[in-house]
Image (cartoon, rainbow, N blue to C red):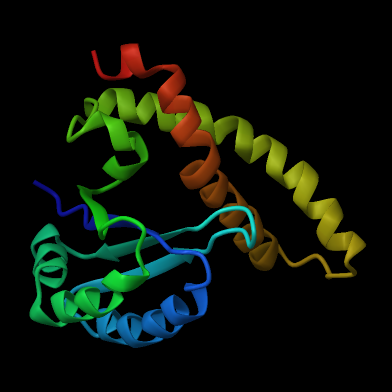
Length: 183
């Protein structure tokens, strides 16, 4: 079986007024995470000030074993214990291999759709975005006086597409077609 890597999606519900302390805590845990065996990358989606209070951290590792090793490590346990007073809810996370995290809402447990359905759903979501996003992003980049440069344009467009896929499209799309997807 081909190694697909593994992702963990961590949600931390932060208490009001504790955001700065949490940011300082992130400054401690992020470098340790980055030096863990098999680490690939991480993204932090911060809450919207005065509107939301949830931080979402997505971490990717080369193998599910390396990811599990980090998530269960003493270093992480000690740091989570220090951050617990900042949380509304306990440290919550889901480990997924490959792109499975796109297909797993909080209420689906560990159910993952079959690969051919994942392929069709992902393709049907990316195709319209790949047509629409360049039509919106390129004029905006030119409006900002950013010169046309194929590689930079592609970087921005793909970033928008991935952001929308992970945080907007897939969570809603998978809810909409849930009966078919998990059948």
